[in-house]
Amino acid sequence: MSCPFCDALSEGSIVENALAAAVADRFPTNPGHTLVVPKRHVRSWFETTPEERTALLELVDQVKQWAERELLPAGYNIGINDGPAAGQTVMHLHIHVIPRFDGDVDDPAGGVRFVIPERGNYRRPGFIPRVQKAGDDAGE
Image 1 (cartoon, rainbow, N blue to C red):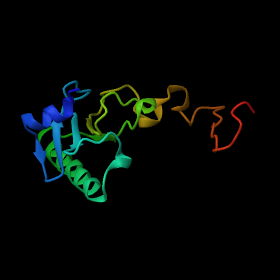
Image 2: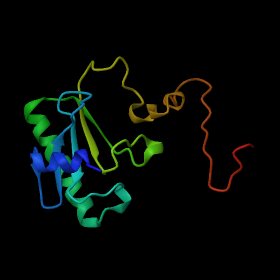
Image 3: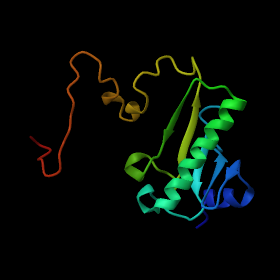
Image 4: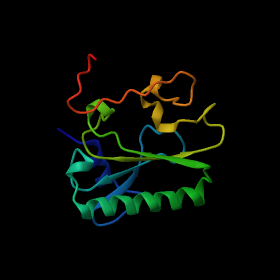
Protein backbone atom coordinates (compact mmCIF):
# COMPACT_ATOMS: atom_id res chain seq x y z
CA MET A 1 0.00 0.00 0.00
CA SER A 2 1.27 3.46 -0.88
CA CYS A 3 1.95 6.03 1.85
CA PRO A 4 1.08 9.64 0.98
CA PHE A 5 3.86 10.98 3.20
CA CYS A 6 6.51 8.66 1.77
CA ASP A 7 5.30 9.79 -1.67
CA ALA A 8 5.44 13.46 -0.61
CA LEU A 9 9.02 13.03 0.58
CA SER A 10 10.05 11.90 -2.89
CA GLU A 11 8.34 14.97 -4.41
CA GLY A 12 10.37 17.45 -2.37
CA SER A 13 10.11 19.28 0.91
CA ILE A 14 10.01 22.78 2.37
CA VAL A 15 13.00 22.03 4.62
CA GLU A 16 14.70 18.80 5.57
CA ASN A 17 17.57 17.27 7.44
CA ALA A 18 19.08 13.79 7.40
CA LEU A 19 16.21 12.13 9.29
CA ALA A 20 13.09 14.24 8.68
CA ALA A 21 11.38 16.61 6.28
CA ALA A 22 8.67 19.26 6.34
CA VAL A 23 6.00 19.18 3.63
CA ALA A 24 2.97 21.34 2.95
CA ASP A 25 -0.29 19.82 4.19
CA ARG A 26 -2.41 18.89 1.17
CA PHE A 27 -5.57 19.81 3.09
CA PRO A 28 -4.45 22.84 5.14
CA THR A 29 -6.60 24.16 7.96
CA ASN A 30 -4.82 27.52 7.75
CA PRO A 31 -2.22 29.18 5.52
CA GLY A 32 1.19 27.65 6.18
CA HIS A 33 -0.15 24.39 7.66
CA THR A 34 2.90 22.12 7.47
CA LEU A 35 3.59 18.49 8.34
CA VAL A 36 6.94 17.44 9.77
CA VAL A 37 7.55 13.75 9.07
CA PRO A 38 10.36 11.29 9.72
CA LYS A 39 11.97 9.94 6.56
CA ARG A 40 11.76 6.45 8.03
CA HIS A 41 8.21 5.11 7.83
CA VAL A 42 7.01 4.76 11.43
CA ARG A 43 3.46 5.01 12.71
CA SER A 44 3.99 6.54 16.13
CA TRP A 45 6.09 9.11 17.99
CA PHE A 46 6.85 6.28 20.40
CA GLU A 47 8.56 4.26 17.63
CA THR A 48 11.07 7.00 16.83
CA THR A 49 14.67 7.03 17.95
CA PRO A 50 16.05 9.85 20.11
CA GLU A 51 17.92 11.09 17.02
CA GLU A 52 14.71 11.16 14.97
CA ARG A 53 12.90 13.07 17.71
CA THR A 54 15.65 15.68 17.76
CA ALA A 55 15.55 15.94 13.95
CA LEU A 56 11.76 16.33 13.95
CA LEU A 57 11.79 19.07 16.58
CA GLU A 58 14.59 20.92 14.77
CA LEU A 59 12.32 21.09 11.72
CA VAL A 60 9.36 22.29 13.79
CA ASP A 61 11.58 25.22 14.77
CA GLN A 62 12.61 25.82 11.15
CA VAL A 63 8.99 25.79 9.98
CA LYS A 64 8.18 28.34 12.68
CA GLN A 65 11.03 30.56 11.48
CA TRP A 66 9.74 30.31 7.89
CA ALA A 67 6.18 31.16 8.97
CA GLU A 68 7.42 34.17 10.97
CA ARG A 69 9.11 35.55 7.84
CA GLU A 70 6.37 34.75 5.35
CA LEU A 71 3.02 34.79 7.19
CA LEU A 72 3.36 36.73 10.46
CA PRO A 73 1.07 34.47 12.53
CA ALA A 74 -0.09 35.39 16.04
CA GLY A 75 0.42 31.85 17.40
CA TYR A 76 0.68 28.16 16.55
CA ASN A 77 -0.93 24.82 17.16
CA ILE A 78 1.65 22.04 17.12
CA GLY A 79 0.41 18.51 17.52
CA ILE A 80 0.45 14.82 16.80
CA ASN A 81 -2.54 12.52 16.40
CA ASP A 82 -0.94 9.28 17.59
CA GLY A 83 -3.13 6.27 16.82
CA PRO A 84 -6.61 5.91 15.33
CA ALA A 85 -8.34 6.71 18.66
CA ALA A 86 -6.50 10.05 18.65
CA GLY A 87 -7.60 10.83 15.09
CA GLN A 88 -4.58 9.60 13.12
CA THR A 89 -5.73 8.78 9.59
CA VAL A 90 -2.37 8.39 7.82
CA MET A 91 -0.27 5.77 9.57
CA HIS A 92 3.04 7.58 9.10
CA LEU A 93 3.96 9.79 12.04
CA HIS A 94 3.49 13.47 11.30
CA ILE A 95 3.62 16.61 13.40
CA HIS A 96 1.15 19.32 12.44
CA VAL A 97 2.51 22.87 12.60
CA ILE A 98 -0.50 25.14 12.11
CA PRO A 99 0.05 28.90 12.10
CA ARG A 100 -2.78 30.74 13.85
CA PHE A 101 -4.01 34.24 13.17
CA ASP A 102 -6.02 36.69 15.23
CA GLY A 103 -9.68 36.18 14.34
CA ASP A 104 -9.30 32.82 12.54
CA VAL A 105 -11.81 31.37 15.05
CA ASP A 106 -14.33 33.14 17.27
CA ASP A 107 -12.85 31.95 20.57
CA PRO A 108 -9.53 30.09 20.55
CA ALA A 109 -9.52 29.60 24.35
CA GLY A 110 -8.89 25.98 25.24
CA GLY A 111 -7.00 25.18 22.03
CA VAL A 112 -6.25 21.47 21.76
CA ARG A 113 -8.49 20.70 24.73
CA PHE A 114 -11.40 20.82 22.29
CA VAL A 115 -10.41 17.57 20.60
CA ILE A 116 -13.06 16.21 23.00
CA PRO A 117 -15.54 19.09 22.71
CA GLU A 118 -17.51 18.55 25.92
CA ARG A 119 -14.26 18.57 27.92
CA GLY A 120 -12.66 21.55 26.24
CA ASN A 121 -13.90 24.43 28.36
CA TYR A 122 -12.56 23.51 31.78
CA ARG A 123 -13.32 27.07 32.99
CA ARG A 124 -17.08 26.77 32.56
CA PRO A 125 -19.23 26.73 35.71
CA GLY A 126 -19.99 23.22 36.93
CA PHE A 127 -17.21 21.50 34.97
CA ILE A 128 -16.21 18.25 36.65
CA PRO A 129 -12.93 16.70 35.49
CA ARG A 130 -13.22 13.05 34.49
CA VAL A 131 -9.89 11.41 35.12
CA GLN A 132 -9.76 7.64 35.11
CA LYS A 133 -6.67 5.87 36.35
CA ALA A 134 -5.48 2.49 35.13
CA GLY A 135 -7.37 -0.21 36.99
CA ASP A 136 -10.32 2.03 37.93
CA ASP A 137 -13.76 0.65 37.14
CA ALA A 138 -15.29 2.89 34.46
CA GLY A 139 -18.76 2.04 35.75
CA GLU A 140 -18.27 3.63 39.18
